[in-house]
Image (cartoon, rainbow, N blue to C red; front, top):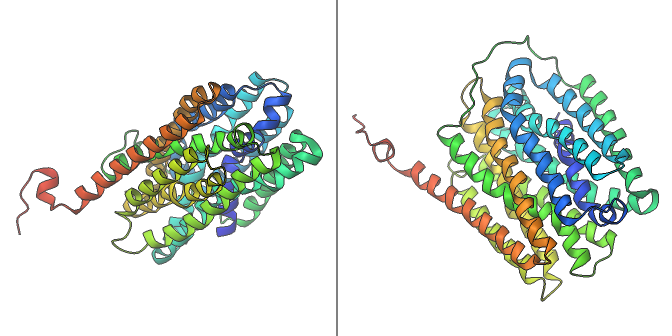
Length: 387
């Protein structure tokens, strides 16, 4: 089941990683400008952010198996449409459809973990399945980007669509049946820890999305890398993200360790963005920056999901996961738009400094929350705690 959940997370965002990794080819063949390339990410994640609260409620109501099969079928459809896109307008419509699997991914996989995994192993399993997102980045940046050099970018995207269909059949045959559908109270506004994690995820998402979308294009246009080497930057980020998510999630699963991790990882992500900015003057630093973004920024999102599983209200794991994911997706919708304007003007250095500022904001939110968590109860809510 862990392998299946990891695959589902990979396919949920594969279309956007492919657009980033294949960015140099798309800008040449479809005449997609850097601003429009960023808009594809904005549209996809805006749809995911809007759909996430509803998706979380659906998962809590009908169960993870049905939702995971639907997720993989929607991913296959979105990838097939992207591979068939004759224009940028059609491409944006296809990316919008890709928001549906993103909205279902975290609620459905988290719900499956709560139902089937013992509490002692939930941290490590969550890190493993969250690493599936970066497995998708690796697949887009290396094997699929290499395939695009032989079969064209459309052939690479269609190959990914067929793989998603195979995964849907796998999920249908492997996952246990869902319990009977039941009504659950709707929760649309995050509160308490979920609200803090949503704000943290929004700022984190702004920075990660900019790196995912523009790192390959930056390597090709400013550092002189070829299309395959530029796509390999995304693959390197993906490999580092896999290691970071698995390792840090295991740490977060230990009692008392998770509270301080998000702030520390976001601070490390600030240093990663500064490395990318400095790579204008020392090109090899771009590889170190890509690794650091994976180890710190990408891993921080997995740690936030471990915290959701630890703090979710009974019966509301799907909705609480969705609310935190909505914050992350909103950040993914906002970040590339701002970065795209700077990239259009050739100001990549300023773009990486903007990413550093976004990660710094996430670190501040996480550290304030961690301090609040360690205050006595009467300091947090203003009431006296009596023995």
